[in-house]
Length: 411
Image 1: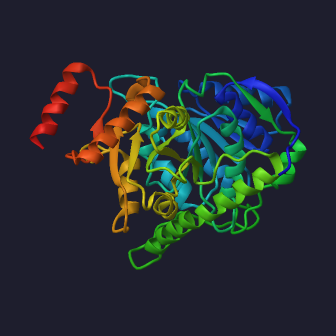
Image 2: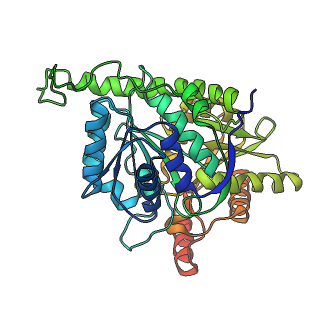
C-alpha cells in the first residue's frame, strides 16, 4: 500500500466536498443555496472566481434548475457537480429520475437535513432515503476525509461503462458539514492519475450530429427494458465500488470500505448495523461493550444504493442478532435500512434476529451511550424472546415513550 503525499488541512465537510469537485476536475457546477449546504457552492464560487478551479459556474433560480443544468452539461460531455439538502433535494425529485433515466453520471453532495414541517435544519436521512428509488447511487460517509475521498472515487464508479449512473455522497448536517476535522488533500496530479478525464462512451450531444434523448415511447417500445438496464447497472456497480475502493487504497493509503466496512465482527455474536456518523459513535460503543465482555461488532453500511444484499448475508449469517439503527422512518414499516436488512436475510439458514431502532430524527443527539443502550436492549429482547414489534423508537420524550410502551404491550 502506497501513501500519497498530499497536504493536511483542517476543514469542514462542506469544504471537503468542494475540494473533491475541484480535484475531480469538474467542468460545470450548477449552484443554488440551501442551509446547511450553502457553503459548498460558496467555496466552489470562490475557487472558480480566483482561477483555482477551471469550471463553468452556473447560478440558477432553483434546485430543479440546478439538476436540469448539470444533466444537460453531462449529456454534452462535461463532468458535472451540484449540491443540495432537504427540501432542495425534494424539489429536484422530477429531474433526479431524468438524470438516471438518461444515464448521465452527475455528481452531487447531499447534506442530510430533516424535511419539514415542522421546520428543522438539523440532521436526519429522510431527504435522501425518500429518493432511494430514483436510480441514483447513494453513499453515506462518516468523516470529512471520507467526504473528499468518496466523491473522487464515485466519479470513477459512476463513469464506468457498466454503470453510467448519477451519484449522491451523503453527509450529516452540521455534524460533518460545518465541523472542522483534519483532512489529507491529495495532490492534483495524483488525482489526475487515478481519475482520467470524463469521456462519454455511449453518446453525447453534438450540434454537428444532432440526436434526441428521453423521447416519447409506447408500451411495446423499450421503456421496461431501459428500467431493467438501470437495475442491472446498479447491481454491477457493487463490484465496481469494491474495485475502485481497493484501487484508491493502493494509491492513497486510505481504505474506507467498499459498500460496507467491518469492525470487530469476525468473532462477534451480535452486530450493530448503521451508517454515516452514527457508525462512528457505534465504533466507540463496540469498544466499550467489548471491555465489558459483550461479544459485539459493527457493520458500517456505506452504500445504500446499490444495497449490498450478498455482503449483508455473508457477514451476518450465524450471528445471534443484529441491531439496525436508522436515522429515518418509512412510516408504519420501520427504518429503510432495517427493511433492507430483513429482505437480505429472508430464508437464510441461521439468520440472526433483527432488532430495528428509529432514532436521531431532527438532529436529536445520539451518542455512543445511546448506541450502547439500544444494543443492550436488543440483546435482552433477543435472549428473552421479547421481539414483539418490527421496529422500536429510541429516545422519545417521556409522554410519547409512555404511549409507545403501551402500544408494545397491546401488540
